[in-house]
Amino acid sequence: MRPFVTPELESVEQVYRDRGFHLWFVGGCVRDWRRGADPKDVDLCTDATPDEQIAIYDDLGLAHYPTGLKHGTVSVMIGAV
Image (cartoon, rainbow, N blue to C red; front, side, top):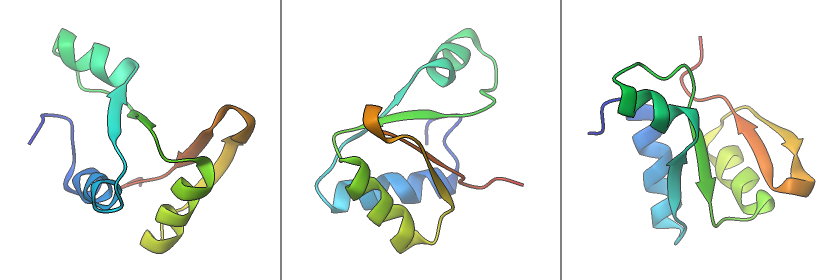
């Protein structure tokens, strides 16, 4: 397992793959990991449309927020406390 990827995030990634989509880690989590720091959050990029992402999160019962749908951005809480 990649160092900052939790089992919950691995499960979400697997669902994306099972549905034929890709999921990439981008942004600050990659930078922090490369610097040896623990990421505070994880940014993902996917080829799934916002509607397809929302369907995945609904099916998984994950809270999500349409933070920037016109830019394709959906925020989701995975393993949050």
